[in-house]
Length: 346
Image (cartoon, rainbow, N blue to C red; front, side, top):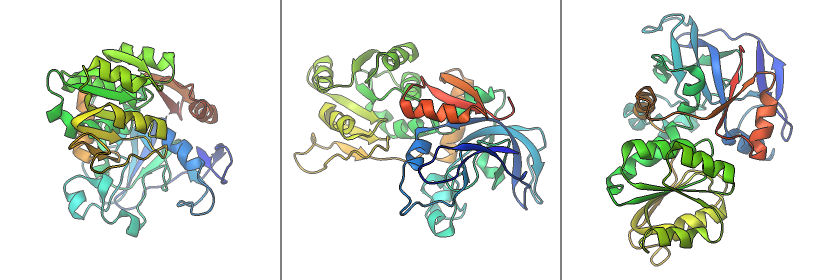
């Protein structure tokens, strides 16, 4: 089969031919309908050789949907032809966090060598994908594969980030979304669907701000050295009760801290290396700072239900598997407006 692989440190990903996978006991083989390209992949491919955590070559793609092509021995509850979405942050299934469905925070995954597809395990940028356990699959139930595949990360991650802040996003509150790319434009929709808060979106390009307005942002601002003062002005000096930074670079993290109100939740989702000092006087009183990762299995199902209800949709660009390297080039250059989706079977 064809697969998009990261093969050498510092090189561009390549479309290659690899052996067709076969499911072992307890595993599920999917014929991949759609795979999502993510900035996390760009980050992984920028890591140096020293300390690189994964074996190469590695098939990319941690967002995947497909149809069941074959079942390994002992698998029940699924049938060939079922259309499913893949929950990516695989865990051991046994520890306390996994027992609560929080496999994104599995206590044993690192020790056991358990990795997500596309981030250590073979990913979805291929014609076929092995899923380690049927618990990591959810039925599409009518969702279009192209629309659904970004929800497995670009939808789940912001949903997980937003859900704990909901008690603070009461009428009259303000939520700031920094970075209106693949995750940020879905975050705006989740906030509109679940809260009555005013949503202020920040980005460095007018195209992304236009997308933010299209999907429901009440206010849009350029993310520059004047942004924090403008947010303060919009909120009569109070600041925002919730701030979500989907970039995570030092300039955006600085803005996140500068626009936060007393008792605000500041959530740094982006992985661009920025840090925010925490301590008495460093931030408004009782402001909290978190750096979440992906989401739980129950939240995965909730995100899919939001999409079925029509509350969220994803702006996508589609590519064939042969065009997948070009998708990553555009992602690296910041020219993808929304989310890039690869269709391995056309």
